[in-house]
Length: 178
Image (cartoon, rainbow, N blue to C red; front, side, top):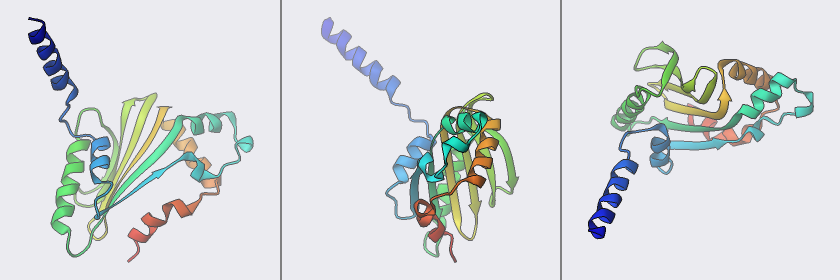
């Protein structure tokens, strides 16, 4: 009897822990080594900010930011079909209930969208998805804790005053050169 109970417990654990739903996290992990993609993880240190010169609001916004993940698909003459498949996968993931769309511009084939995960005042993740039929697409995940739209706007002002280390972004710059 104990053997049956242990077997059922293990089966139920496997069934509940195996979530087959697609997620951006899984998508990033699956494609990090794919030759069609460029993957970058960017830490807040890229900003090269003198924190002593920041206001309390700016410091709070900076502290809410953990990291940024970028996954970009570079379109070329041989991978157009794969581009369409991968773009459709990202579209499907972003239609999941947990991703709330803030804005979208352009058409489905070319444009951008901004979505978030969490509640209005406690955002865990912002997602920017941009695609252009001549270049490819990029998915940018901004991860943090207790972010909100105001903190993102404050981060934009910090970015303008920061001395960004562009060396970390070099692979992405190379991708979009024509």
